[in-house]
Image (cartoon, rainbow over all chains, first blue to last red; front, side, top):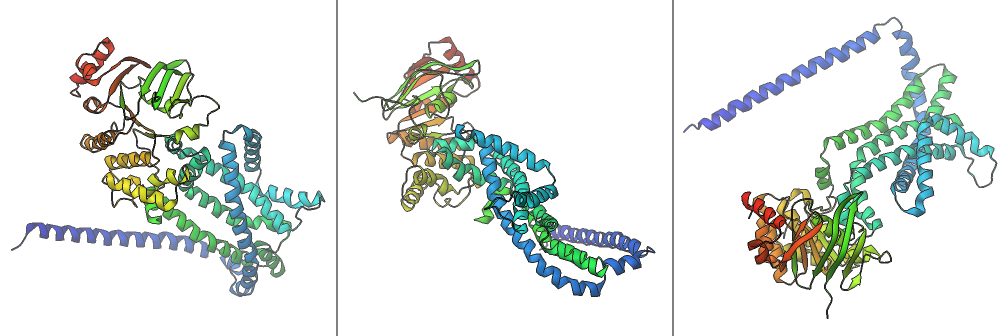
Length: 281
Length: 249
């Protein structure tokens, strides 16, 4: 016996499939036309031959890539260490700034000043000032390695941003949460650690990762202090060979790190935070 | 003579120049339940929060087991550890599982060994019909279930008294009963409690004394039967009539 319900379901499913197929086809076609058009536009310019030779020279690339890659390890190391320090340092600054403890009054002033100053100065200037200024003090005990100094400069600059991200995260947690934590007998510090902070950090995971991506590429700024990291090496090779392809090689390396991070960020933004929390456990 | 578990003497509080409590006196004896009734903004919640030292009072004193707790020399955390509060909006910790919500304070604030605290938390949840939901996160529970978790969380620290702040006001009507049933059971078991509520039938059943708050003062207090059948103050009469007209009595 034919059930009308089943038939209608089948008809609906078929219509849905047709619709999906058409959407896919339209998307593919428009992508090919737009991207193909852009490529064609660039490639057909009279100057393209020269650009191709100067920026996308395969033999230069093959020669430069391994050298740039081995220099890139400095970037990766610097990035990972600075990021770890920034995550901790930014949190300390944010907590100091939001705390109401009277003993931390000077800390509040200092952290406010710190955030305002270091967010206001271009990162490249901070790298310059720390990188050349600190050794000029000729104080014993201060680091003189340009990589370390560059890392400190980046940390100072990004710490200010990350502190503000944490601070906004702390503000997203409703005061009733703190009150509930206090009411069950937790101290202020315990309320912060077990209730407020976990929620605050989860609420700002995405902006934190965004700063993470930003720091990853700004690591190249330490090149101005002289260490032979990827960008610096690429620049040297470019000067030697009168060809810009090594810079393209360096750009690709930075992209290889930021690209997956950007996809993780997208996924985080798509997910409902409470469901994400569930998936984590 | 055994002092009351909670005693409030002449407590006043103002937000700016807006007075919210104007000289409250209250005694809560062991195993007793006192119900605070009155319209929104009459000061019920503020009074409970002041007793739990979540807010500072301007004048007067609060005593817990005969000892003053509103003196500046008393550490509020030590006092809060002896009391427990249940909130209108549950205020469960969304970052923790149901079990961890209940076990957090015993472990961190009272130093109960982790395994023991979790075992006791499990037993409490089981008792409130939440067996099997230990690993869930609070936002996956119904309002009634969340409020039952919140009551379990409050009881986990074995408080001297329970402060209940309109614990059914945020619930859908069909979920109110399951929460009230638990509180009735707790009262049967001899729990001492101070209950701000809009559920008059419940106040009548459970409370040993009903206090009617109006504009930050207790205008009338006494036996629940008497208050509900023959209120004396005109404000109490008006309040009860409004509830009656709304079909809430």
